[in-house]
Image 1 (cartoon, rainbow, N blue to C red):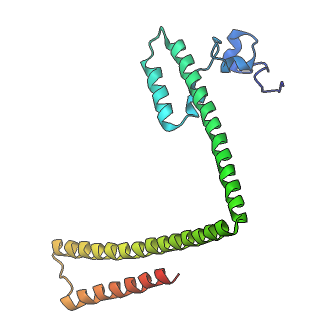
Image 2 (image 1 turned 135 degrees about the vertical axis):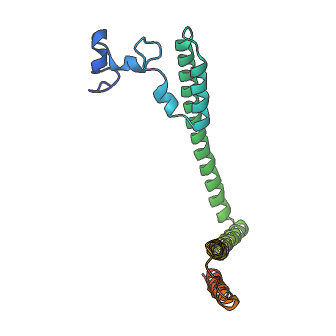
Length: 189
């Protein structure tokens, strides 16, 4: 299929004027002298593979640069092909697991077990969320106490008077009550 901008369409790059008329696809062909190199393909790789490809390219000498670029490009294409194949396998596995689950639900005993397990998972997830929310509330109290101590140390360094013991206890009491009620609300959700 030929489109206006496809690989079989004429190249429209102004930088290519000196090469004469040629197909734009030659810039994508590792066997072509007009090949742009593997930069675009390498850029689409994962972080570790991309770093490895750039390292290989940096280690190449002037004499073997093109061969290294072609090898890196080939490896990058193979990585991409394998990723797509793995994606298909994962989808197929998920479909087979889903089909097995549906068949198990048809069986009265297995269906009951699955429903019970799903309820347990839901309860565990709810408890995890409540625990995380309560943990954040407690971390807020720790942050507030740390901020108060830091402010008092700053006042001491500046020579300013510190609040009385009763005022300090009142501040801590207020923070503790506020945290306690927020903590309790997290568990009532």
